[in-house]
Image: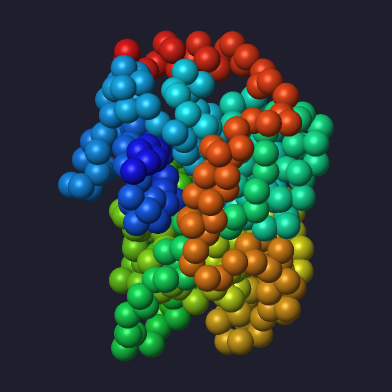
Length: 338
């Protein structure tokens, strides 16, 4: 009987759990052993049946066949294949297509990410690219939607954290006015990296139809909302996969798949129009979603594991040697407990 695969999940942000737990479920179903390494997060983030490795020594003893990271970096001293599964759809953000010399395999979402990474793979020659879909979306498409008697329209406001792109300071006054005038229900979901000075104007808003989510889980909020308001957050693409409209304030890559707003004064009318069914973005949005993530079967985790298994079997045949990336090696050598 062959030895079960050992998989390690390297986590540095709380949003990683929604991405990696569907992958964990699929891996366990195959008989694999899964462990987690939390860099800077509390062990309370883990569930009772999840195993934590606390040091480099424990990782080396575990001997992972593959290390999965939804962030931009991964410790190169860890054994195993380094697999990038990404932390979001944010193709319009600086750094999404940056090659840092750390990963052996990139598991992409759909043509909008696959095609650029294939070109980069041809250019660099030391990593593979396989289009799998995103594990997080398995939960989105398999999510049990509860019946509700709430007839209010629901708006999900999900601003990005980047100081140069966040809409929170600019829209706070307009949102406060809309909350006071309309019976629409508002839920705000801040990014974990949102700086307090940018969140403060939104936190100052009060109203019976206004709440700020304290949960780390985004997917239930996506299902509850009728429209998303954002700026250049990658969560917009997740929302569009559900066939729902996105109102985007000063998006860095505006297009017909979004309802684009350039001033706070335009916001209320844009929200009213889409909530009343006047949605000019519908056809373009459906096309964009198909290009971003064409998989709707809830089995992207299975495809990721298949891609990893194929590379474990084939090895790095035909690939160049990875760069040493000495500075990045030193970063984690200094940070992580031995």
